[in-house]
Length: 220
Image (cartoon, rainbow, N blue to C red; front, side, top):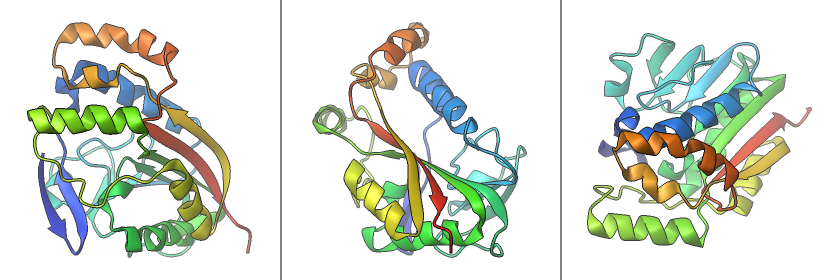
């Protein structure tokens, strides 16, 4: 993935997910889960190369990611200062991006999401919150060169830290789930047979790889 530092945040053109069949299926499952909690006009923050199917509007700080996106109204913008008026969206989605934002800016970014949400809106976050297994396996993969260059300059949040930041930004956490399977290291493979492992992946959800959060603005 190509990447650079833009005013402190890491912006990137992610790897082509469809070339990793199991990872592609896992991300599809994530999108199906997210879709269950969306409604109204939907904003996605930092959609990478693949906007969520339910999103109406998306912002990206990496301009190249917007060039070939036709599914949504895409804009190049910094999520720490959203170019939208208050109460513009019913749902804000954020998938696997907050770890690229400096720790000092994460609460500011989520407060911006709160600002553009309607009072009865919903924040849907999916963020990497690695336990020991993920830290070990990804550490080995980076050392072996399997994952290319490590651009996680700011580190992932622990699940508890993620909950705290969401609450401090003005939200009530309505639902929270741990997602992940010991099969995740197989997602680096490009073999088509790995696509068939998705059922086993779903049956072995006992490793913390991500945290999925549903939150609503605290009523003012």
